[in-house]
Amino acid sequence: MAPAREVKFHVGDAELEAVPRFKYLGRILAQSDSDWPALYKNVAKARQKWARLSRLLRAEGVSPKTAGWFYKAVVVSVLLYGSESWVWSQAMVQTMEGFHNRVVRRLARRMPRRLNNGTWVYPPIKEAREITGVHPIGHYVNARRRKVLTQVSQRPIYELCLQVPRQ
Image (cartoon, rainbow, N blue to C red; front, side, top):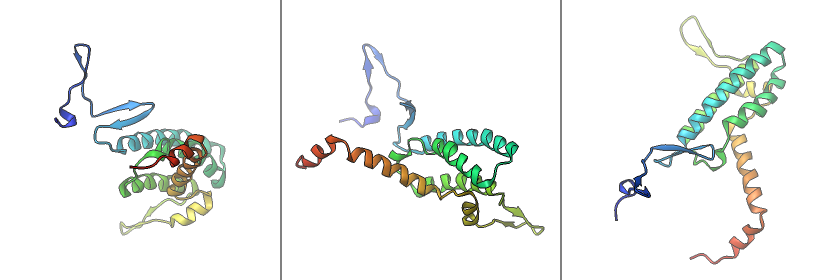
């Protein structure tokens, strides 16, 4: 039996092209079965949303707490779209947390600053989170996963699946 990458698919007489990644129902699927392409796409979209939203929030002079509510409602929803089904690696969590922490620090007006000797001082992220009312990114990931689990477990077919003997 040939490895999957060597199998050729045809529609009529036409051979279908093999592609390393493609979009299916709005989600990027990769030949490597990695969720990194979807993560990168979400981060790029979230940056665009954040760029537009931050200008508006700054122009209106809203409080850090109010800005935190807007960030969670608009940007975090874009950032985590589809993440309920991802297989999260530690590197993926760190990538998301990095973006998230930069935004939270900016919302709280607690940005890192460079000292005269060239070293950087980062204000505690916990302080910025308290000011803005924003939790670590894992909090929102877990909340989304719990919601999906609840929805699936409340479907009538779930009970039928549990009753089927496993082989």
